[in-house]
Amino acid sequence: MQESAISQQNQIITMTDELLQESDVIPIASIEGFDTGSVPAGDLAEIKNLGEALNDLDQNILEEEGKISALKANRKKIAEELLPDLMEKVGLKLIQLNDDTKIQLNDFVDARIKDPQTAFDWLRETNNDSIIKNQLSITLGRDQDALAKEIQDLIEESFSVTADAKISIHHATLKSFCRDALDNPELAESLPREAFGIYQGTRAKITR
Image (cartoon, rainbow, N blue to C red; front, top):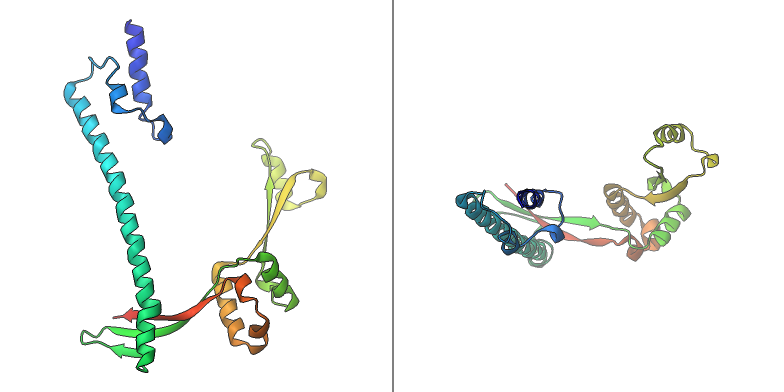
């Protein structure tokens, strides 16, 4: 019986492992079913209180993250719609408030490739493919360090490994290129904006 109690206590201790998934968490009611006679009542009460506090904090974090998302969406609407529309209506690009705070309108271009095939084909056809990055990923076993080093020095088909090729463009490079392409009449006319996911507008910026 004593051995069984020790085993049960060890199981409880194991349940606090940080690496456990949510599905491994045992409800407090289930834990109370074990023989906890050797655990001080004050400690058990504190464990329960801390567990409830942790759960409350998790809920609060979710609520606050939701509030932050709403605040960001509201800020985006004011900065990219309401302020630019009103300032452009009255012909202002820059305004200084009484506290020396400045509100300035800046044009911006954002982009996120949505149709890689169309976007990359267009870049190659217009000789702008220098911004494309090629990434080669090779999957090896844990005991193949020596082979990994050898392949790193010289990749050959004879190694018979599975390799995945990936082409991409750095986000900052993509934004910069799209901004320049839109300013180039020759490129702007044929630029597949939807494939590049181009988002263009004017944004109000607060400076102090």
